[in-house]
Length: 455
Image (cartoon, rainbow, N blue to C red; front, side):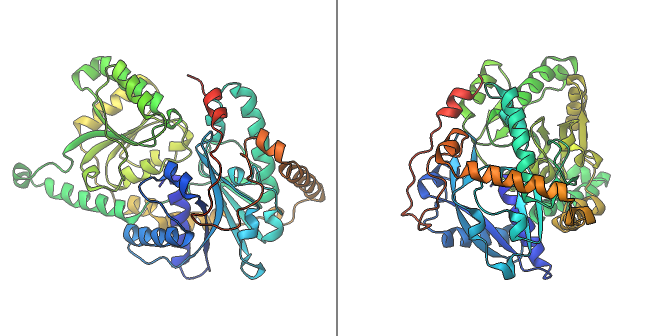
């Protein structure tokens, strides 16, 4: 249920809903023993079971039956990357030529790091990549991070250029890519916008003085943060900002106490550090952002600097809350909303927190609600995905360079020792014969993560 899973799903659902395109969403299927590491509360023995759950989730979250088809490919959960790596040639799982018209590659760099099959641009007439994640920021935290960052940046450029006609960056928080444009093409589920609309109605009623005396506040809870508990998701910044705020003059007058929702590999360490720093952070484990007991929080604090576009920030704004976030390219789109309070320094963070805790958010307007919706996001996507004449007909020199780069990259990715050395994992070159509970891959070697992580 991470943003990189939910957003592609909803993009496909809303594209299919328009009735203009035949849409197939291609999803990784993990072996059940690895599903336990990713979503332990829900284990699927077959892709069909997973597909039923996906369709039901969309219907409950969005209020309509999804019309897209679902297809599955084998994936491995790489514990050293906290990511899913395709197993085998992913293009072989795509339907035949009649349906191979347009491909949307969600995370084209990640998807193709270890790709050993044909070029996506050879299989499809129009290939658009959407960059979700700032992988350079994550690798920078490892030992020899500067060297790894340069190498990864180069590889990302190569595979995106080779396999895409156009690349859409959600924000300029990520590296520059060839053939790229920047546009936030994500939206939020109607369930969050419904909460915002309800809060706006309540806030309008509260303007009546007589009613204000007898009714409870629109928001009855204070501040919270929600996100996967790994250091790279902004938890260091969160602990630092809360600590700095609460010892400041304004902070002593208006202290920040936070409920924190999320699970992850660094949960125990983050919680321990918060306790050592004597911070008023209360850790509650994972919770769906749409849960009813989240609705009444007034302030969402998200100091992360590693996001490209934070799904949780968009959802909080949609629910009519204040959002306190850093001045950062990932927040450029959100900063245009009146309830988004942006800071650049610890002192400005304190001012934003004080304002949020001592005042009420502006009711979400119809225009801002639409800008956050998937209908608007789909329009932005279709506009950004248009190809220029140069995208369609690159120069002979560019064609030659891309052909050579693809040949070299594919050749190396077909050599098992090279794949293992670069982090593809053992036995990921060939797909399993069957996608179901009978597939039991060997445990992923996480020694790279354990040895590379900085304390």
